[in-house]
Image (cartoon, rainbow, N blue to C red; front, side, top):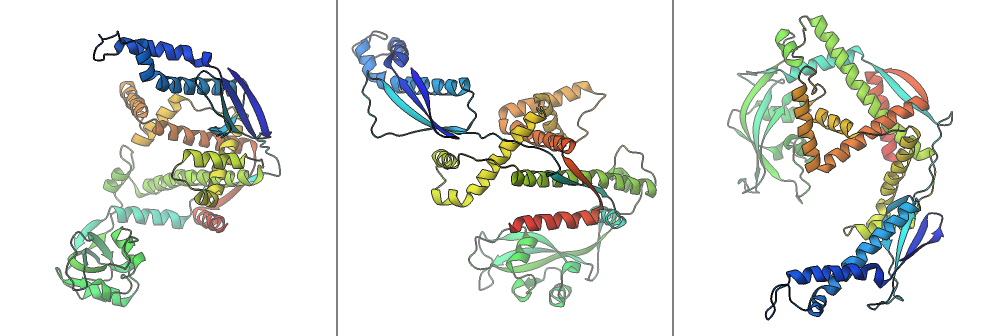
Length: 455
């Protein structure tokens, strides 16, 4: 076996392998002899088929498998021994000039792309903004109103008013008004206070239970955007907008839940919340925790965007394109060229993330992954400090699930690594701490992503 590296440029190389028959033929012979012992053919007792016949039957297949094994093992051993940090996987290089006959040396070539050196320096030229969010009174009051609405009670009405909610069935019909077989048929709620036109409101106010209304007569609803929102169904598959009749089934109003101990206990079980003041404080505390998570996520997005913009390095672009086409049969050159900047950003971030993890000596343990998955399944209070047996049972369940579905553990590992990197960056970078209330933050976040989407 001979193996050497041919450098094409700073980030691309070809590894040349010369494989001799003695590198693989002994194992081929061993495998043929093993198969010979199992072989049964007419005219021969089991295990007594001549070696020559067994070789003719299995030799080429075994030889191909052994050549692939020897080539792969030695290729990746060479990469490891030479400490080559590669991107993707080696690509076989086809050479029409190369020919091979049994018994001769076999020459193989593999192209590799190398990871560039990545330098991330945190100084005054790389400031990052972090938002400390306080809960303004409007956000606090709106949250409580939403809670009361979510836990509201239905109350029948004798007549329809602007506050009425109408339960209906949307039925897809043809041009003659007949219901389409296997067409769309869905229950929905029409909230009259959310309708903007008198035409739409009056169409429902003037109807009775079991009446049928043609949606074609209500311009505010009879459009793709409104129908998709009401039906919670995409209509892209239809060349023309479907026609619907709506059957009135029920109308009612929702009475907001009262602020009392019943509601407090429903929202915060096992907590001693007796008064409206305690409830208000708990809502503010919960909002503060939730907005801290939102702030962290926003910081993470800005951090990633900033580092991708500031940290410059070259990539083996042509190799990466070749590798992507080689390994993804559903990807063509035209699509790759259009989308390559997205793949490129993913690769750049992975390399930056790898460097940051190295700088911060950041690792994610298997125990952290299991606990993270447990929390995602059972909530932040999954660990019961007074029941070690239950905790162990939960972790065993999670461990079994990760073994059956490794992607669950991989995904959690990436999430935990990202969070640790964010915290590391916050500890070493120049951070501009900015105090805002919830409303101000929502506007800042909205504007940031609007500007980003324009790019």
